[in-house]
Length: 348
Ligand code: CP
Ligand code: NVA
Image 1 (tube, rainbow, N blue to C red):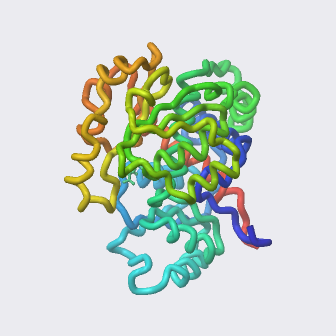
Image 2 (image 1 turned 180 degrees about the vertical axis):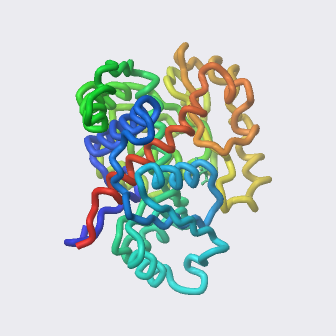
């Protein structure tokens, strides 16, 4: 980072495991506080601050989580969709970044090419948070980690912690002292059956550093990990914790966590027919997962939105599915990111 430049949240690959774990614990503290101690229990770190939420693609979860999080923290979110401002259409991204960042305290942006978020960050005078690019989706994987921590650890906050006068401080302290994010993920096998897209990219630059192994099954022609992602993996030295295969059964064997996403990401709509044909045999069903020898208590994650073709209803709505807690956790993790990046940063 240039001296004096604001901190940006572009991919979890830029954060150390300790920094990722801290954000997840902060998110859990927000969740516990707002569910158990009420709306006035959290510190208003975005008070008198405005945030620009620039979305050049559709969004349900990320948008709702971002707008509500900014408001809960006392700030004012400004949603800017592709009909409102033409990001990179009638002026350069550099000019948009300079102008918008001169007026707001933080920018959250959902873009097409990853280079767009990098350009925004390069020219922004305020922190930029990646709300999804074609390469990475960091706020999604933070929510997935929180969901797994809740699944694999027992979180029982004593009632007296909620009666402390400085309840935000007390709950944060309890969570930081008692919740071990790394322990929940250590030695878990995560199986991905699907496209090599932004979601799995974010998973493979992150979960192996927190102690999990990841097995990625994708069909031929869709099985190349982007070199920019692989470069992050080799510099972290985590290649041995990642397996790439064309066999869903091989990936699913001994899996603790089964994950997939759409086969047709936003922007790939023209490739729909070819993709549906190429991914034949990749639909997740109980039969495929248990028949491949996944662990008896396997769990299922999906970032949503979901289509029938990649996972059937039996799995998606089944007992092992964590998809709705996972979706809700987008809110608590985005709140933690806004608090850390927009709320605790000051313009020089
Ligand atoms: N998972 C996710 O990012 O959903 P949205 O596209 O609805 O924000
Ligand atoms: N891979 C999907 C994720 C949507 C949240 C996409 O980029 O469209």
